[in-house]
Image (tube, rainbow, N blue to C red; front, side, top):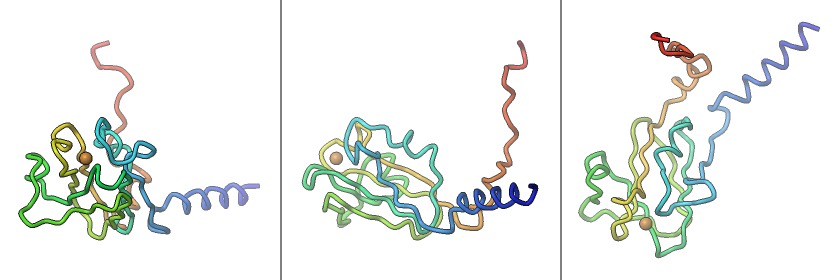
Length: 144
Ligand code: CU
């Protein structure tokens, strides 16, 4: 009986390890890449790893996708000469670890929230979230 339980646990752990296969993330899920969507909240509960892909889905011509640096992201500017992705089904492979920034360069879309920032983790770090290092928060404030 015990060995059956161990096998089940091993299978579940294998399914949780992200390095087994890359994940395609549809940015904004069903909403796609648009205005009026909170992409920071969308990204918050996801873990991105090197090799995963972002799919930006939108009607071609209505939006676009610029990969920018942190300063451009904050200011909603785009680098001089940078060429945006415009196909409406733009796939970006997260090839390197670290912080990444994307925004829409059409009109004022970025400044009203069409921007996405996320952190890409390496495969090595990917093993640690199975047991998060941060202490579990106390269910109640101490003063109660
Ligand atoms: Cu846009």
